Image (cartoon, rainbow, N blue to C red):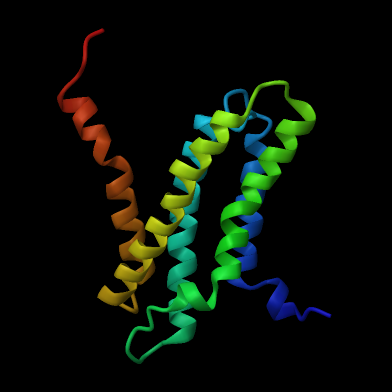
Length: 161
């Protein structure tokens, strides 16, 4: 039987948030099909939540001692569940309720979403190595700067079509 601490742990809460957002995305017009839009939004979400998860696991493993970077081998099952559960939810929804082909969407998911999750993990570990105390804040700032960086080019160099 699961204890209260195991049910309400940080990774489980992040997983529930991610699954809830993905179930909501399956009801919106462009993201209800496993294609680029679904993969792009999922990549953004999973990079952020992957970084938060990496910081949380690194804090549990080495709160005041040298940083232990081997959280991926020790928690690979959690990372695989985190990454591919959303794919299976969307794949099942597509197979049951959509008539659109999803062969391209599978490639988009593996090219966009899976690397974004691991980039978020690496960025989270980097921010944890900079500051143990303010790692969540530093990660959020780095993540927002990385997310909003392409907007400067769109604003400063507009294209006329």
